[in-house]
Length: 148
Image 1: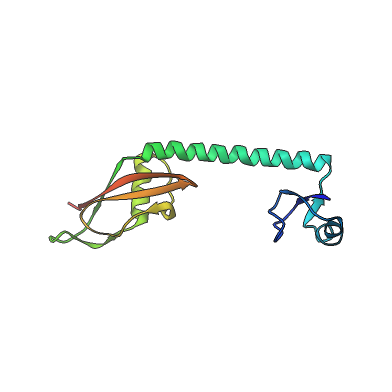
Image 2: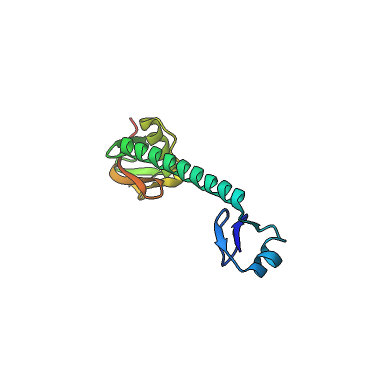
């Protein structure tokens, strides 16, 4: 029997997927618990429409991430912080600092959790990366200067 899953079911599949299961498993377990619905013609059309809409939204999100990555790539973010005469910082530069500065530079909001930054404890330039979407990342430079 073909069913459309309403929830993730272990060893069967994920929500909104169409699967062929035995008649008894569908009638006695999946359908009474509300985990699946029979896959009639109307339900199949609804499921296909949902999957097409999901694919369309994912494609739009990926295109937006790629456009943002193109604007970020090879840019230099300058951050001014307090530090000592020996070149050491008082504290360190965090991903939040970099995400805020990068967001202002490119005019978009950047999540601090997506910024991959090595530990910055001295003045100078380091390479960083921001992961915007699955498989879409952009590299940029972070220039740390003393606060004047």
